[in-house]
Length: 481
Image 1: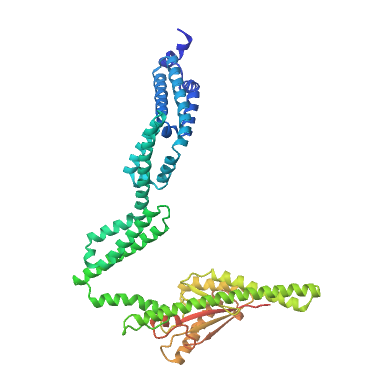
Image 2: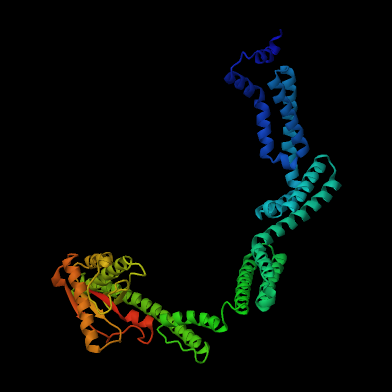
């Protein structure tokens, strides 16, 4: 038997083990594998499908012949054809990447828009047209190439736009469909029409410039809100007409959130003249807060300037007096003390959650307003459930190791002034005693004072305001030296 036919014979007899057979396969297919990788790297499957497909056929024939133990010459012939076709595909793909560059860019845009997912039918048609254009180009049919490339470009653009709309507007369309099924056009036509109009605006914006999706997305979000609003209105109208709720119930349900907002703003809501007066008060309150916030920012900037001036003054004193003047020492100590207190204040602020306490700064004092510490009506005993909160007070006190701690008790205005003063003092003393006896703060550092109803921080005319006035404040007085 000729030597060149031993390989198929041995494979058929099963005399080569699996590892040996794989080594032989790798040696035979090495050149074809390299050519295949080069063709794929050049995107030959897309840009030169004729040559690439023929190369794959020859490559597959070689694999089948090897598996069946056929002639080595036959296998090598198939692999030679595969190498030739793959090489042609790589070269043709390089040329096509130039000729079809605009179409490739259009396809990339559609890919980036996820058109294959959100516009599958259009995407498939575009891919077919692209494949046809590439095959015509490879066959030398330039008129046919230009025609099919033009068809593909239109299809890709349509697929891209459809995908962008689907991703940005599909939720709105679904909400409008839901609204139609829920009979919303009958009960909330004005709000529903707003949603439709916003959707139309979003579509027009995308048609005009599909690559600037910020405004269409914003319009779509507004349309979603209006569609949901229309559905909610229709549900309420349906409930009223069905007798589930009354008109008065509906009005009261809209007034209740305003009451809560007014209470948070420490205002007393009155609805005898409708909602406009309280709305005007709330708007004025918000405007005032905004002005205060701006003023606080200005004050903070002025403080920074003051600190910078002090630092400059220190440098001047250093230059004139050699850094040993008493004025310099005082200024340095003042700056260091202020910086230290700011750092300590920031540390204490992070110890408490918003529901547990508010941490305030009054000049150099740190005031911890204990929101989560409550007492039973008329009682002053500290319950065990508040130990965790008071442990945080002890840790806060340790941040200012030489500070004095004043526990301040406050009440609302309900009840007699004398009894309120006594109750607030007893509660302050109970907290200070707990801090000393249970949590180990030295008693000489702690004092207690009751203010009764004399220092309200909120309006006593509302339940929410009275709740804020019934409080324990822990004042930490740092030593600045």
